Every structure is written in structure tokens, then in C-alpha cells.
Amino acid sequence: MTFDDLTATIKNERLRIDRDMLRLAYETAERAHKDQTRQSGEPYIAHSLAVANTLVQLRLDEETVIAGLLHDVPEDTAVTIDEIRKDFGETVATLVDGVTKLGTLKYRGMERYVENLRKMFIAMAQDIRVILIKFADRLHNLETLSHLPRPEKRYRIALESIEIYAPIANRLGMGEIKGRLEDLSFPYVDPNSYERTVRLVGDQLGDVTGYIDEVKNELRTELRERRIKPIDIHGRQKHIYSLYKKLQRPDIAGDITKVHDLVAVRIILKDIEDCYAALGIIHGLWRPLPGRIKDYIAQPKPNGYQSIHTTVFGPGGRIIEIQIRDKDMHNDAEYGIAAHWHYEETGKPKTGRVAVDRKLGWVRELAEWQKELENEQYLEALRIDAFSNRIFCFTPKGDVIDLPEGASAIDFAFAVHSDLGNQMMGARVNGKFEPVATVLRSGDVIEVVIDRNRVRPNPDWLPFVKTSIARERIRKAQREERDETNDPRFKPDD
Ligand code: MN
View (cartoon, rainbow, N blue to C red):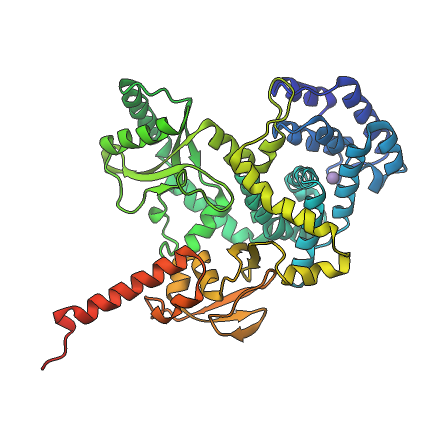
């Protein structure tokens, strides 16, 4: 990566970045890192350029890209944050300072999890762009991780990426970044599972490419006949770590033939009307699998994700997932919160996207609340649920589960997976056994204890749930139980 590569990417993305400022930042970084090399033997500046380049690809603004070039300068060199402020202004200095402070964190496993997350939150609340720079930094560090001599250090960095960075990227709606962070880390965290999953995919994918082309062509023809013009139709392969996690699910139990979205066909359309029209056309063409239509347009995921997913018996009866979304939804799904700083060709940042605003809502709340608190009160405040109406709890593996205020361990179980709720027996909250109706607080780590023989949740739980998913499942169980008692086959003899 050279300075010319970076300017080529900027031109390619049609970003408006002041060339003199950019060059000044590059020269400052190059001079500051002059005597340093990366473990790979490359000059250090190659790392600064790679980070800035990723930020350009995310279509971020000038200040973020400049801060990306300078992000390691105050930590590793004689150039101070005051000098950066003098040359590049207050915002760039704040961003670089935020990244430097985050850089001093060391991940030491679960006991430090809440504390690490807290620091991430603080940094985000001040300026979410700090996190975006940190993501770009981490991506390049993971790409070059094999050059680190100590295996323990490689493992620690990869684990931290999966347990802290990826969930935050996900929460911010940055699906692509989350997938890349996980996939780059996976081989270092669990090399055997990684190898096994890659082999499994290779065997399964053998003939898929030709099939995808067939689906794409049929779709194109059919849509054209019905006068719908797709912006793009492409195949997308599931990220390897996300596939690995799906294979662990009880309903899949390691059987890759049960994973229907290993490869999906994605259709990008002009607007929502076209999305629903396309869905109708697809279902007319290929029979949908019952219960597999997910309308995340009408009901977006908590992180704002919108699309329609449907699984159909495609050409030759072969099962394939099709994802339908409009241009803005696609942009949001790929960039998430970063889309907020996207520059239009006019050079003005975009504003007013509803999904992005929703994502930013809880960060803003946090920022407001953070201002009023002393640092040491922060952890305690996490516990008293100052996220006005949301709480954040963790699985033992560190996945963040976002719940409404007042939610119980039962809500948590259903939020993780419906089987977990159905088979729930008890809950260990922060390592201690608690009743399932226990009301959770932000920062709690919950381990759901299950009985594999159970198939239905306890109907008496209904008063103790806050989420609609849990309520729905429990009501369904109540209905089933009632039907069984009314069913003559279950009636005792007179
Ligand atoms: Mn760095």
C-alpha cells in the first residue's frame, strides 16, 4: 500500500478530500514512523495507509481518513497530540486521541469483558468515528496477524476481535465488517474448527457456482418480463465463522445440507414496492419453503437490518435462499452506522436515514448520560440501567443481547434461541443460580440451564416476560397444551 494507492481509492470512491491536507497527514505520519517497521518487515507507514484506505472504502469523511493516517502517531512517536491539533484541527486530534486511549486496553477474558465494553462505549459516545477507525486498524492487524511471533498474542488479539469488536460492529449494523473481523480471527481462535468448516464448505460448494448463475439468469428474465429492473443481482457466500456458529445450532446439528443460506442470491431493487413485487414473482416461479419467509422490511432486526429473505425450491427442486432489498437497505446492511458519514457526490454528509438514526439513538442516550457521570460511577450506572428503555446482557461467550427494560432471564433465553427458551430449566446470572423470572440488569452474564427432554416453555411464565417473541412462544405452548387436554385421544376413560 502506497500513498498513490490511497489517492487512487479516493478517486475511485469519488470522495472529496483536500489533497494538501491528505499529503500533509501522510508526510507527518511517514516522518514520525520513519524508523519503525511492522513485524512483517514492511515500513510502518504501510499500516497507516491500509487503515486510511479501509476508511475511504467505507466512504467516511475527510477528518476520519486523516485521523486514520495519524492514528498510531502519538502512541509510538515523538509527535504529540498538541502538534496534531495545531496542524489538523480539534476534530482530528480528538479522533486520534480516542483511538490512542482505546489502544492501551488489553483484553484478559470474561472478567474484563464488561470493563472493555464500557471503554468502547465511552469512546463511541464521544465520537463513533473512533470505533470506525479502530475497526479499520483491527482489520489490518488481523490481516497481518501471522507475522506476530508469539502464538499467545495472536490468540488474544483474535479472541478479542471475536468477543468484543465483532458484536459491537453487529450492534452498529456493520454486517460486512463483523463478518470480516470474525473470519480473519477464526483460524487463530480455533484452528481445528476453522479447517473443518472450510473443508465442509469446499465439498458442498463444488457445483454451486453454475447453479447460482442459472438462478440469476432465470430471475433476470422473469423480472424483465414483469417490467421490474433490478439494480443488481449477485450471489453471496455465507461468512465462514457465521456458518460455523449456525452448524452448532441444535436444529442443524452439524449437517451442512440443512444450511439453506450457505449461498444466497441477493437482488437489489429501486424501492420497497419493487421488493414486494419481486417477492411475488419469485414465489410464482419457485415454490417457497413453508415458514421460511422473513420480512425484515416490515419488521427490521434490532440493529436496523432490513431485507426480505425467502427460501425456495429453485430450478431442479434445489433449495436456495433469496434476499430482496432496496438500494438504501443494501447500503445500510453493508456499512451500517458508517453510512451516516457517507459523502454524497455533492460533498455533504447524508442525514435523516431512519435506520441509521435508530442505530445512533442508543449511542446518543449513552453520550448524554455519560456526561453526567464520573468514570468510576459508570460501571454501577451500567447496572442501574440508564439506557432509558434498553438493557444489554451477555451470553457466557460474550454475545451482546439487547432487551427491553424489565426483561427477565426467560426473555433472554428466547432472544438467544427459541429452543433455549423452550427447554429452559433455570438460569445462572453472573455465576449464581437465580429464578427464571429474575429481572435482568445491563451487564449481567446469563447462562441458561436447559433440560433437553423439554419441548415447551412453562405457561405460568407468561406474566414474567416483556418481549413479544417470548410471549408468543409461551402462548403457543398454552394453546398446544389446551388442545391436547381437549383432544379426545387424551381424555381419560370414564
Ligand atoms: Mn494501528
